[in-house]
Image (spheres, rainbow, N blue to C red):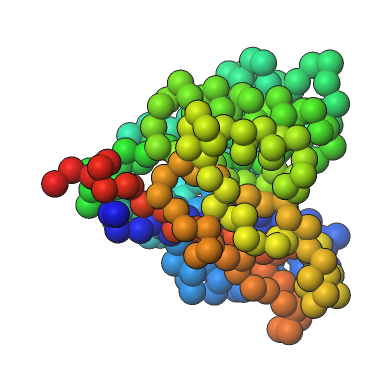
Length: 268
């Protein structure tokens, strides 16, 4: 196999003063420390607001960061992608809304159980410099209320994945555990696309800043990484966090997986 690429999905939690000691301004040092220690090659962020995006760009100089907010004015909460500038070249980037009119800003799924929030996904088609191979990296944050909306949103993403036809990874906050229809739909692409649940062995990711959930192993599994590239799910993990220093780095644990191109996909 080719040299592994470490990919991370990280819900940063929006910037809100309601979080008290866990508000974004107080979490900044811990976030940077975690990202520096983990040193991922590609990151899919969720719940990134405008000022948080500016902060990421300023503080992660080794990465190219792409993406905008989900609102009609291209601002607000978003799901940007960061990739290491010394390892990848950008072939293409697109950001679309999870609706039947994905090119219409702030569009939503009409007549379904979707919440009032528009939802988006980003895709960065990246060339790995060492192997000279191209793959597609998708990042999203599905609806938090509508079970059927989540299925429809995944359908929009997988139309793109099929049309693009590249080796891919899809990550994000799905607001759904392994039993939800949306996750079952994604896993149902195993036969046609070779999809693997890279984070199948991770028991939980969301603790909501509650330490008892962390200690008792009662975190919800709503963050996932799927791929049809070479991956060993036993190597994937959630980045541990606690409030021993007074706060958490987020209300979600970041998750990591290691992907690579299969031997027959790499040029000699």
